[in-house]
Image: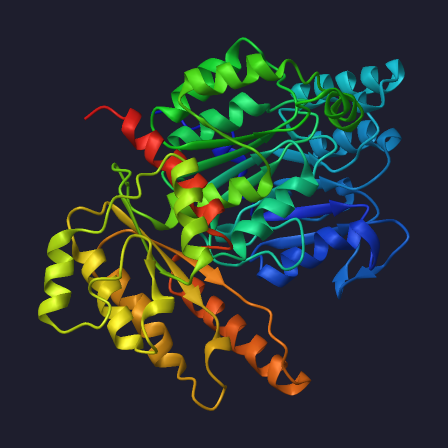
Amino acid sequence: MSIHPLEEILHPKSIAIVGASDTGRGGGFVTPLLELGYPGKIYPINPKYKEIAGMTAYPRVRDIPGTVDYVISSIPASGVLELIADCTLKKVKCVHLFTARFSETGRKDAAELEKEILRQARKGGIRIIGPNCLGLYYPEERIAFDAGMPKESGNVGLASQSGMVAGEIVGLAGQRGVRFSKAFSYGNALDFNECDYLDYFAQDPQTRLILMYVEGVRDGKRFPVSLKKAASVKPVIVVKGGRGNAGTRATASHTGSMAGSKKIWNSVVEQAGAINAYDLDDMADLAVAFYFLPPIKGRRVGVVGGSGGSSVLAADQCEEAGLDVIPFPQDIRDKLKAENNPIWDWIGNPADFSISMGDPAAAARIGLLMAQHPDFDFMISFVRGAWRRGKEQFSMDKHLEQYMELVATGKPVALVFQERPRSLEDDEAEAMGRLSTEIKQTLIGKNLACYETVGRAARALSRMIRHYEKEPA
C-alpha cells in the first residue's frame, strides 16, 4: 500500500521556526516544542537575534548548517516567496504557513501571491500546510502548536479549518480525558485540503475517531466521496461553521471559503453516514461517547441517582433525545423486596434516590441491580457532589465506589455531575468545591464518559446509538 503524502511529512527530524522570537507568536511555536520535549533539532530563524530560548538563532533557513525537514513560517506574507526559495535549496519537505493575509483578504494581489507560493513550492518538491493556520499537533512526535497541549496520545484525529477552533476542541475534549493521535489546523487549504485530511485519517491506524471543523470546502466534487469513504470505516463528527447568513460572511473573511447552503450541507453529511455536531461543546460530548464507551446498539436507558425534580427532568430529556426510558423491571422490584430494601415499592426508572431515607447502601444496591439487568442497554448515573454531607463525614473512596461498581458490571455507563449551590460559610464552601472538583477529576482520570447535564449526555448517546444502528450486521 502506498504511503499517504501527509504521512511522509509528519515525522520531521528537524524543525525551523522562521520569525521566531522570545515573545509573541514566533515564540509561541518554539515554546510548545520545548514543552512537549520534541527530540529533534529546533532551529529558530530571525536575523535580529543571536540566540532564542537558549538555542542559536540563524538569519535565514539557508544558513542552517544541518538538514531541515519541516519549516514553520511566522513572517509577513511578503517574505514567503524568498522563504520558499531557501526551503527548496535546503530540500525541506513541508512548510507550515502560519503566515496569513492571502486569499482570505479578498484582495486580488494577495490571492495571486498565494497561487505563486504554491507554484514555487511544487517546483521545489515542498508540501504546504495552510496558509493562515496553526498547523500540526502530533503528541507522539512531541509536536504542538500551543503551550499546555496534552503530551499523551490517543486515537482521535482532528482536521480543523480554524486554528483557534482546533485549540478549543483539543482543550474541551482534553479536559474530559479525550486524547488525540494528530490534529491539523489547515486554514486556507492551499495545498492539502479537507479531502486530503479525511483520506489520511481514514487509513491512519493510529486514528479510530475523526473530528472535523469545516467552514467551506475547497473540492466540492471530491468532498462527499472522501467523507463517505472515511465514515464507512470510522465515526466522523463534523461541525460546520458558516451555517447562517452572518456565519457565511464571517467565513469568507476568515479563510476565504464559500460556506454553501445549510440544507445541502446537512444532506451531504447525512448521506455520507457522518454525524453533524451543533457546536464545539456538542462535538466534545459526542467525542466522549465514542472515545470511552463501547458500541451501544439499543435505546433502553436506566437512569439512577437523581433527586426529586431532577429525575423527572432526566426522564423528559432522555425521551426528547430519542431514548427509551423503560419501566422499572418487576423482577428487580421482587428481589429488592426479598432483601428488605425499604424503597422496593417506591423506586422506578429513573431511580429517584431522594426517597432512599438516608440509606446510601440501599440506593447503591438498586443502581447495581439495574446495571446488571438485561432489560437496560446502558446507564446514565448522576454523580452527586460532596454537598450532601459535611466534609468531616465524607469519604471519597466510598463515594466513588458506587460509580465504579456500575462500570464494573460491563454495562456502558455515562456519568452526569449533579451540583447544587448551597449557603455555606466561605471556608466550608471552598472545601466542598475542592471535593467536588476532585470527584470529577478522579472519574475522568479513570477513563469514564462524563457529562455536565443529562440532556447533553442523552443527545450525544442517542446519536452514537443511531450511528451504530446504521452499521451492517
